[in-house]
Length: 286
Image (cartoon, rainbow, N blue to C red):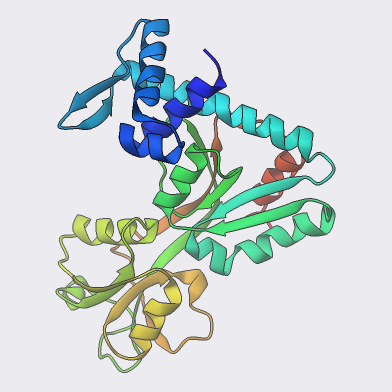
């Protein structure tokens, strides 16, 4: 077995389709099939089940996928460290709220202390961030959502809270009651967002039906819709500076959450990456 086998296997796991994998890797489909056969023969296991022209990983396939992802992650780190040791770089993924309202201020102490380390920042939702970390496309992630995966290490570093907002002229009181929120029109974040998942869960737990009439990829769009008196919204408390909306205290809703530092369990901790993690961990104590 060699890295070529593992790289092809990794792409096949991500796409679950022989033809698409062959196209992406500029190979023939029989060549991809041959790699799978060689892997299965070498380890004496079945890696995929073939149902309705789609591939599904077996338990053994999932086990190999986990090890292969870690191995290729280390290989990529080796390449980057050996080829770019004079120009160290950290690839950071941040979910939208963190990227918009926190990351600039939070990374400033690191950049001031280590000016030669390049910080490459990508903004995405929780689901996209999780996938990027698993594929080793990022070194660390800063997420407002929960990432349940056995290959990811998750460490809370900051307490945030979602808040319910209403138009200034809406008759609802500043201290909201459950009955006042029943069947209200709401603007939320998009599918895949940690903010949306937490908000819907909080309403469901209290048996409060709401109508989601709009989904946006950022807090500002939600606030603008509420300012225009189109409905209610739920946003991070970090987003509420200098906006003309009414904040509704809803103590009966569980809208507190952690911002999390996330990285792959097989991630090689370089000195500058460890320094960055330590600075991020100090944020809430500052």
